[in-house]
Length: 410
Image (tube, rainbow, N blue to C red; front, side, top):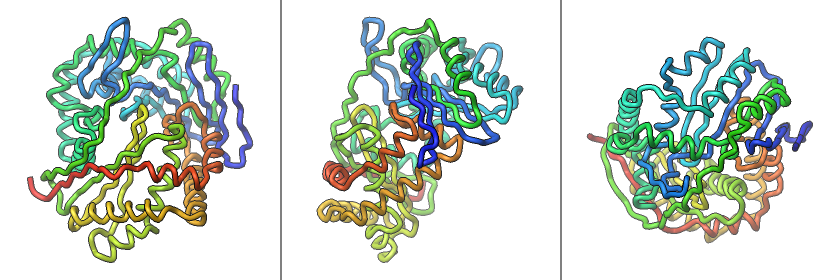
């Protein structure tokens, strides 16, 4: 058991890998609200895998569909049982994981047992009814110009790659998802060694570990073997239309993995703030030339050895904005980063990490994104980042990019 308390960063962490294979992270905090979560290593990009002696290919949107269906039980929605205990429950799916969580001021033990029991079992309700709900969700997403620009840029960068697919899939793909596929994916990925339990607040570590071991014990089947995602960079541009009053754009660049997943992500955060943040030469140029007046948003995704960095926003002229971003990124790479700027951004990242981690839910959310390391270790990792590593990472951001512009008008 790894116990890191009274840390200088304040990111106290208790970590233990149980006999059943599940990693448990406890993030002690003196708060009224307590948070419990289970993170499953199965996301929207996990579409091909080997399980039970055969290769499996599943439709886009399967992980998200399974997330929905886990709440849908023959005796009603599981959310109602949490509500009876005074808790709020929810879930989300991204490219690499599905996270189920609850927040509560009381009845933590009862809520935690309910969470573990419903995540490890299947007793699905009406799949057709849930399919219609997901289709409405997909239609809602299609109206989001920001999502349209983001996934459009990724599809230009990684044509036909699972990394570029909408997390919820398409109306056509969810028609091909049935109970048999959902149960297959649950057997393949919802197994103790592929699940991480995370709890934060004024909680008892021994109770959490005991309950997890008791409920998950005896289910030590092996996780499916995921096939490596093929994401050959192409680069290109597309223009779409949407319900917007200004151009919405996204430009995405590949970033080759060189260190560990966590270190790569931290270095990209430093690079992003230095290159695209409010104090960057890029933002100064964008505002001076009256192209855009809000700091661009930056998304960083690392999955199965594939990485990308996506810069997006609203602009008076999206094509000009993307050209400036490309020019300034190239100049930034050629000019590099000096020690003073690196230290400033590293300290800024450390401060932001510690501040956000002080909130129970944010701490759980950050922990779910960290592969195998606790918050205390992540805080120390930020302290240990150095300029040579950052320059090496900066040099591996590719020049090819995928672009998408959503212009006003349906």
